[in-house]
Each structure stands twice: as structure tokens, then as C-alpha cells.
Image (tube, rainbow, N blue to C red; front, top):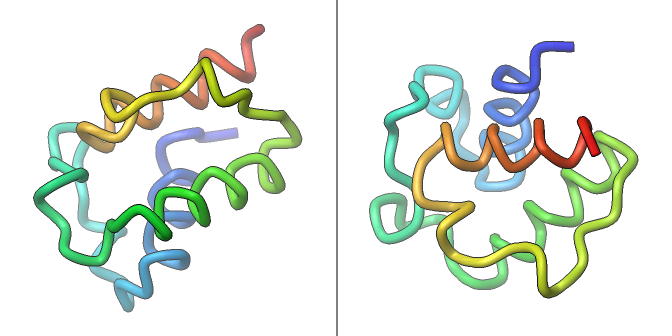
Length: 83
């Protein structure tokens, strides 16, 4: 499974980016850089990742730094899958 591409697909879908998300790189900034990524979208992203990757995200294991860039979000998911 290509975690990076799956994360891009989730971002594109949840944020209704209409394909823009597929051009994001690991360095693409998320929180504060993408207007569609507000607090409600963060909750929707976490829920979508839990469903897509079949894991649970506990409140104390995620913070804003996981949503800093596409890369940090992909790394978070990879870490959950490796645990």
C-alpha cells in the first residue's frame, strides 16, 4: 500500500479539493496553508484515516504537528500502521 497516495486521496476527498490534492508533495503545508482545512475538516480527516487504514487515533497521540505538511501526516499514518 502506498500510504502517501492514500493520504493524498483522503485529503482530496475530505477537503473537496477536486483533484488539487493529488499534486501535493510531502513538503506541501497543510494547517494554516489550506483554507479548507479547518477544525471540522481535521476531525473528518482523522475519521476517514481510521476507516481507510483500520486503526484508532487516540486523543493524546495526535496534535497539530501531524497536520503540518503532507509528509508529517503520511509519517503519522505510517507510524500507526507499523505499531
